[in-house]
Amino acid sequence: MEGKFKRVPALDKCFAILDLMAHTKKPLGISDLSNALAYHKSTVFNMVYTLVDLGILENGTEGKFRFGPGLYALGKASGGGSELVSTVHPYLEEISKETKLSVFLGIRSGKRAVIMDKVDSPFDIKVSSEAGMAIPLLAGAGGKVLLSQLSDAELNALLSESKLKKFTPASCTQKQNYKNMIQKARKEGFALDDEEYIEGVRALAVPLHLNRGNLHAAIWVVGLKSQIKDEVLPSFRSMLKDIARRIEIRFS
Image (cartoon, rainbow, N blue to C red; front, side, top):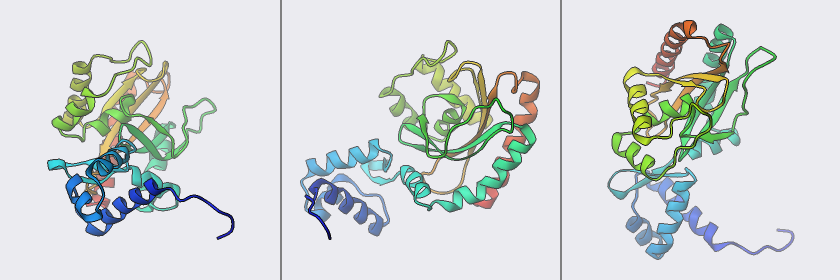
C-alpha cells in the first residue's frame, strides 16, 4: 500500500462486532459480543449503542441486538439493496402517473426516515427530495406510518427520549396526541400530513409490511395543498393502499 496511515483500532473493533453478527446470524447481547471478541464490556457497550444511534444496529428483545435498517440505506448507496428498490420502483411510477405527484419510498433508520427511491412530479412546481436523503422520523406522513410499525413499547421508548419539533404552526408537539396519531395510522393503514412538516405541503402515506425482519418501509405522495385537496384524499388513499397490498404480495 502506497503512503502511510495510522490504523484506527476503534474501527477495527466496530467491524469485528458487525462481522461476528453477520456470521452468527442471530441477535447478540453485550455479553455475547464481549465474550466472543474478548473486548471489555464498556467498550462493546459504547460501540454498540453508537451503531444503534446510527441505525446500523437495532435493539431487539431481551437486550439482544440485530442489524438495523441503516444497512439497507448503505446497500442502496453501494448498488445493493436492489430487491426493495427494483421491486417497488415501477409502482412509484404508476402512482406518480396517476396522481401527478412526487412519490417516495422510505425506510426507518434509527430516528430518521431514509428516502430509498423517488419519482418526481411532472409539474414545474413540485416537492422533491433526493434518494439517500435522511429526514426526521418524527415528522410527516411517512414518519407516522413507519412509526406505526413499531410496538407500543418501542414507540413509547422512542418518544420518551425524543422531542417533538414545531416545524410549522400545524405541527403536533404534545407526545400523547402524537402517539394517538400513530395508533390511528396503525389502525387505519395510512397517515396524512396536513402542513405539519412544511407549510403549504400535504402528504399521504401507507406502510409496507414486507416480511423482512426489522425492515420498516413506507410509500408516500407529496404535493402542494392545492394539489392534494380534500376531495381527492379518498381516491388517493384507496390507490396507495391497493398498491401497498400488491407490493406486499411480491415480498410474501
